[in-house]
Image (cartoon, rainbow, N blue to C red; front, side):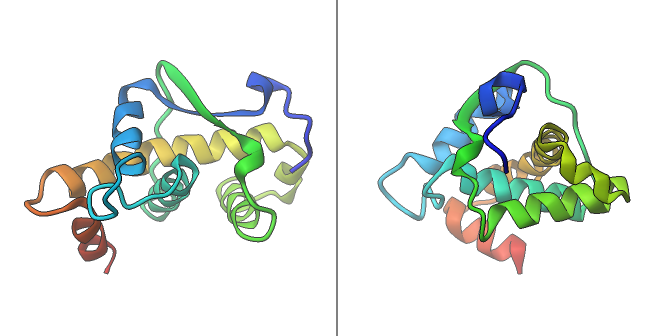
Amino acid sequence: MPNNFARSNGRVSIDASIHDFYKQLTTGKNAEDSPFLTMKDLFMLAASIGFRAQQRKPLGKREQPFHYSVFTEAEDIPILKAIAIATTGDVSVLADPNQIVEIAEEFANAGIGEIRAVVNDNAGLPLWNLVEALR
């Protein structure tokens, strides 16, 4: 995506109420407790799950834990663009990187709720709860 996001200086937003959960799944030393290397990785899974469920949830108070530049051209950005096109039904959305990110943020905000339920509502370690849920 172009390096000229106008909003929030190119920062990607998540709901502040879920920021600690993002940290929980990304900052531990044990992969079974913290199965994601980065918040971006968790965000991408959450956006995909939200999209699969066709659930978008507007963000409340925002935290901006990472910059859009962490999205990879080869893997992440095509997924975000595909989600935006499928959501709007219009390829002209590709001309607005802010809208692409906003759509992803709302899907991720819905999807992270599902991830949190899987991790917190089941006995066992987060990694294995996620693996089982994604089967």
